[in-house]
Length: 111
Image (cartoon, rainbow, N blue to C red; front, side, top):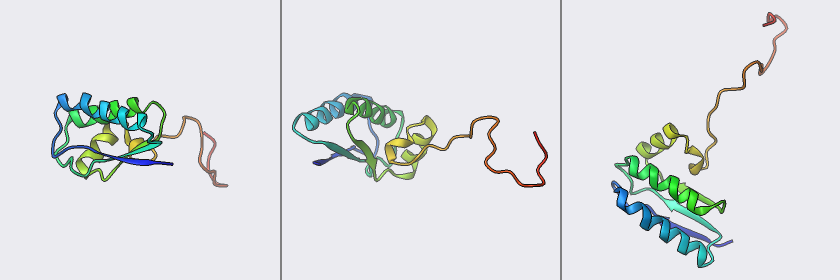
C-alpha cells in the first residue's frame, strides 16, 4: 500500500484554495497512491474554508483511504461540530437508540 502525504496549508485556508487541493488529491490517486494522509498541523486558525476543504477532499477520495492527522484543537473542535470527526480516525460519539438499555441491575424498575 502506498501512503502519500498531502499538506493542508495554514494557518488559515481560503475558499479559493479548496479546488486546488482537490485537484492535487485527484492527481495523487491517479499517480498510484492507494491511501492519502492529510497533514493538517499547519491549520492553526481554521475556519469554514478548512472544513469545506476537508469535506470536499473526502468526496474527492471517493471511497479510497483518506484521513487527517495532526489536526490542532480548533480544527478538531470544528470537525466534531460538523460531524466529520471520522476523518481523524476517531469514532463519532452518538446517543444510544431509544428504548435500548445498556445494562440492567436486579433492583431496576421496568420502564
